[in-house]
Length: 146
Image 1 (cartoon, helix red, strand yellow):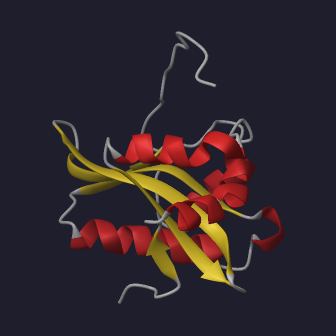
Image 2 (image 1 turned 135 degrees about the vertical axis):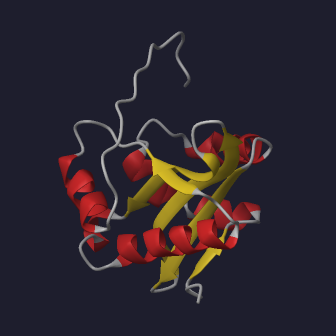
């Protein structure tokens, strides 16, 4: 059963309420264009979900559903973060479990995310949650995205 403290941000107010949490993962974000950037990504299938406790978002995740030849139907997590002062209290596990349940409900074959190589603590969390390291991700920056 889906956690009722977790929902998908639909309104501008709900999206903006996720900003402070998301900024911990993406410090380059600017509050003034956060809603517009989320709305742009929504046009490409992105969804933003959040876990509320103590009347505020404590953990957020951005994700998308898709299809490709390698994975079939998949749920890909773009962003997953818990407020630093609330980590190690189970909020990230609850949000990850919700995402996995959502992927099953949406008939996904696989569940994927990338994590920066320097985020060792996050890697331990993902492994504890039953995920496996399965590939390297390569990039080449072509222009600034800010």
